[in-house]
Length: 108
Length: 337
Image (cartoon, chains in turn yellow, green):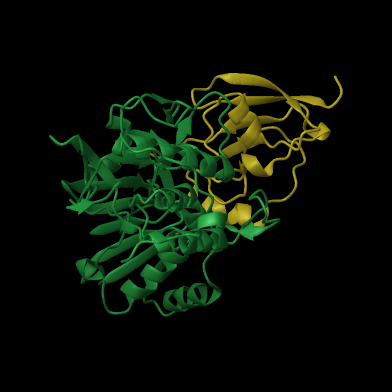
């Protein structure tokens, strides 16, 4: 289908969710996960001002570099790894078809 | 005991606008907020970000919106209990609610308006095993009184201004030893604070561990050491009388979850007729409520607040008739003192 991609999200229990995502609605991974009722908070609404949509990118898609804001906010996340990103900063586009991400653990 | 007409839980935009709308009906308001300043998320998370969907403001900074709401509420002399979390609720024999905060401040009102947004902001706790066992036994998430750390071995975690500022403060003749642990080499605080921390580390006055994180806490009842992982040296044990993890704040629904309200997915169910909850006298407005078609927008919260105070008025004064008066006709008549 036009303007649709499929992405794979592994939740914190290890279950994989295959989500069909529109690429013509200006959505990001945080919003996509929330709309699928996956446990992603997205407290700040997508401004890279909290760290509640922390996820790991597990496929080798070419994503834009992290902004300073995103890097700074990852300081408030836990279990940060090389492939850590904020979901709200991953904007869904056609070249992300097949993207695989895993939700990062949350604090208490 | 603080007495008011409408006790508002949450001093964000929606709670502040409630003061204005209630004031037009000559109802007095008092607000409780867990944060030390009014404004909620707008002040705490994104004060410098523009908001574009406030009617008649093509663009306004979140912090400025809060300032203007405070100005708009001012004639109605709202009271504030800030930096305290609304904890317990009970009813007295005159059908008034008594709300007690975590610091024991008591408030009494016939009407409660929960405008709690995402909940109360609480320190984000690192997912370290058994951490809860050491809370207030060596692990603190907020530094209340620096004297508490005099001549102690203190470890601070985090990369923001509060971590940097406290490191500097405690290193200057307060703690006997200060270690700052951060997950990467760069810090996001003010440049001069970053420089000062670097200088202190170079002078051997603090121990700075970057590309590092705390994995475990140890001690026999009281904290005495931490396992710290660094990229360069692997795991090491550090002596610590205190560990202060400073990873910012995140909102939690908090104690209102136990107020016998109907809650779905961390939001309070309301009737859209007047935004009343299942408990008579308690209303919920703004981001904290839910109903079919709910949108979490500030402007929707303003609308909810406006309708809610009409219902609150009728509850307080069942025999009085309420006529909608336009501010353009009548002006805004505030309260004396």
